[in-house]
Image (cartoon, rainbow, N blue to C red; front, top):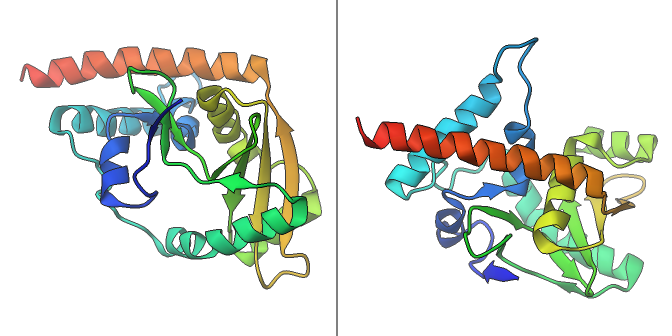
Length: 206
């Protein structure tokens, strides 16, 4: 694996992510518009990445909302809880690239053994309780998790939701690698990159 070990959330990490299509943004890449209309979400993300290509600077520039800050603060506790629950050793990592081109990547919350990952979410209480009640992998994060397994060439990912004030503070479910889903993701990402490069080239000539 090709890894940038800048701490997640740092300015160096944000800089490394600039121009990279990341697993956490796959819902934007694969967003569909109404009917035959193009997706505004997808186009906005493409324009942001084109701007990053031309400036070399991340669009967000370190911005974090309250939910992101809370999640970052609780993540070490959630990781410790996961380790206690599973006895798995978690190796923290930075930004992992799919290949030497460094166009596609994923910032995973932890590597587990030779085959696994862990993805940690620390949502608000209501969302955490929804996860517990449903008892299934939240569809919202399925593309992200499969994308992470694609980038890292791993076989499974343990998804954990953590909230210290819930009646059950952890919701844990293992997601297996899905080759069909990964093929769909790969096709969508490479199509996106092709369009992105055309847009960035057009802007560079203005």
